[in-house]
Image 1: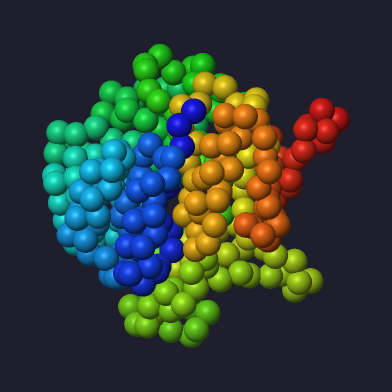
Image 2: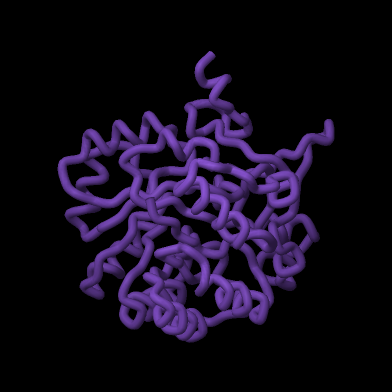
Length: 295
């Protein structure tokens, strides 16, 4: 299994983004996804900046794929994506409109997790449309993924979201702006002050969700680090960037794949806790151990 670095889901200052990817050039990941996937108002890096960054990373031997927004809302969003497709050469489609962009540009695409592919027939349709890799829906269990792979009839690589705070839903409304009593179009770019999103708790004080602009994320970190020895027919594992310890996360997964040893200090890396319930067909917030699964 190869490791991939998923698209950046948060809004960071430009220099922080550039420094992050300068380090990523030396990480043991085969593919790096670039681009804005959450909100078009995030403008620290423009389309030209993402393309230039992709050129630099490609020189270090990385495969570069430019991710589309999950919600393409305007003509300018499509225009930016068309430029990424034309000049970048490969995109991840997270919206059906992005598939049309890929086809018009004459390039293949990665079928992203937000396209909601739940059966082999749908996956075959994407292969015929030009998909060469797909990412199952984030709530899909290992059994669901295995059933879809068994049902498909056409060849395509599979990549699963292996580590990160799950992007559960998107909305036309910006939750971060709402939190600060601001309109979406006058949000003052409050997201940039929250490098890993804003934690939301229940009235009882339990961690519940993370607010990240128009995106709602899981509060805890989804992690398949302890499930790797049993994962089959998966070609790529996606690691989602976070503000700190991404390098350590990637190193831990590479070590686990190579040696089946998990020696990382997860209480420091992800103090919010690790969960994997969705992968085991349970509530996503549940951490499932080998003993629990056997029971």
